[in-house]
Length: 167
Image 1 (tube, helix red, strand yellow):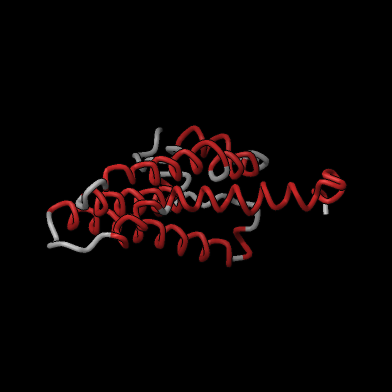
Image 2 (cartoon, rainbow, N blue to C red):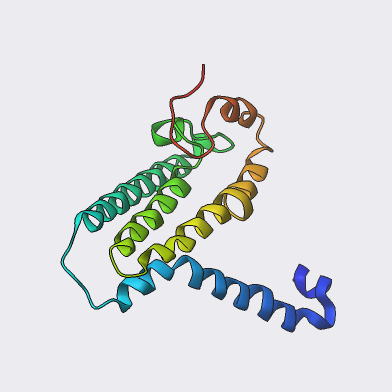
């Protein structure tokens, strides 16, 4: 409703451009390694394919565990207003975003094994940029900053790459 009021008579045109065309374009760019893999005629699996699958699996597990920990934490009414600081959340403030990005890099490693597949690097670069600088982490960090415990958690815990907590 806020966009409808703000954009007035341009609501439909701007919605189409900003929501559908922009997101569609970004999705195409991010998914480019997948499209390249699907378009290839197939070949024998090599070292990069195995490495890519391993990297993807690591990212999938990291994201899944982080999401499960957060869901379990949020389900407990005693945690209302608190910040999850255990499990993977002790080593990174955004394990689910980290896992997501790792998965896209794993897919790209598989794409590198096909002719021209290196060009698919625009996919993981784009999703990494979007999550780190545009829509993922910046928006969530801004919301989390409202919590009085966040400043200490932020000081102690790595933003994105999992690392040992600072003392």
